[in-house]
Length: 595
Image (cartoon, rainbow, N blue to C red; front, top):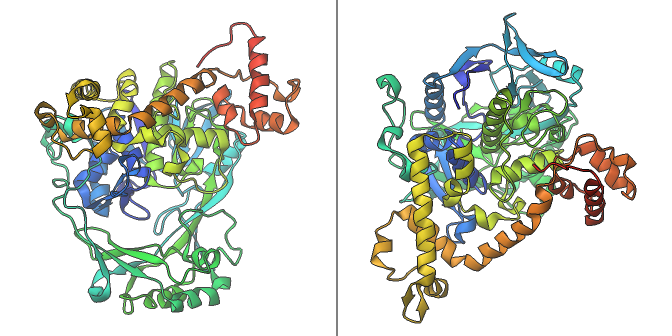
């Protein structure tokens, strides 16, 4: 967007360091990475050129729920993205720990650092990860830090609280890392990558100059041709002995002994949680995932724990294939401050402090993909704020990114939020191949992509619409081509001219034709909801004084201060009768604005 931007980070050497699993994508997350790519983000292309295993999840199911996932080379991913930032015009990078923000008349105007250097800016985006008063736990052992071997931002929390921003605690965990040569692979189940990998970036709308290696000034970035360096992961399982070790040592777990006050993730539970909450399950699946091509380190996906180190050793050695495993890094839990996201507008700007934006784990989310999506939206809207322009608001029916942000600011969260396909009521519209087409208007309006790529996407969109319409009208044996596709699937001798189109265009057309009835039903539902989604609720409304509103609803509305009537309708405890009362109230106010 051309805005002069400063990136402050506590350690330049760990920019883009994957704190947990070096994997990108998964259910709903894979679709979100493609949406990030459609809006000019770097995550997809960085994943493609540093990926070491690609798999399409739910491949046997319908395209609507298929999600790409990639295991990355941890260091290559981090180093390439650091290099990318260094080459980015208008971006200045500086190493310093932010110790506090500078406020003036209710707005943020800069920040203080540990170097006694202050930086001034017209907007600030705060992306603290797990470093905001981060505290790591291994049994009863505690160390300050947001990641093993890294620092803790200890004073910034006080600055936020002084500005009236509420903070709470969350926790997350990570498994032990082990030495690959100490693993006995002979009895383990091998999991290979897909022979024809599904990539994250939309390579079909990029020119050759945007692809992989030679960049500005002739500098060559790290990376390889996507799918050319795939390695295997391996599957093993916990045993009854593993379960017994966990149960006997629950009192030593930081989480179960009361050492940790933060709430942990429901959908990525620790091994302690698994054996307590799912006591009827005889075993739990674990994945052994290599951390890169130039390291022998493996990640035990599914064995997150905060048990003491000696118990972790015993635990790991109870697992088939890991009887003689050597631990390189212990598992640990980390708890940290977050700001409940109902304190934000849908633009991710703070309701309490003007020009201050929040993104990532400070908003209560977990996952690289959720953080990247919020960072992108907050960044765009910080620029819009500085320029005095309206914010970019992605609606729930447009993308998983829209669902993510609406869920956060409308409903809030008291546990680390993770995106799933089930969270999106319009998920049939969110097949991963359509992200560029769905978000083209935003990319164009906010100048998030190069002109040549915008033109390529527009051309692709026109071809998709042309063939979707044509197949509905073209006749073949027993009816139209579209009817034949819905009757028999896409294993047909389709028109030769259609088969000459790119694989990406063919896939999107076939999806739209095959699911036409379901997609049209979704679009009709969206059209019905458009009216309340566009009605802006003024900040001046005193919901406690609105006649007829139930007390519970008035309290919830007063607390969350919804941005639109649609957002108000999704707040737990607010029912259709309450929305009707608000409509009557707004109708009595002349000149009610739309969003």
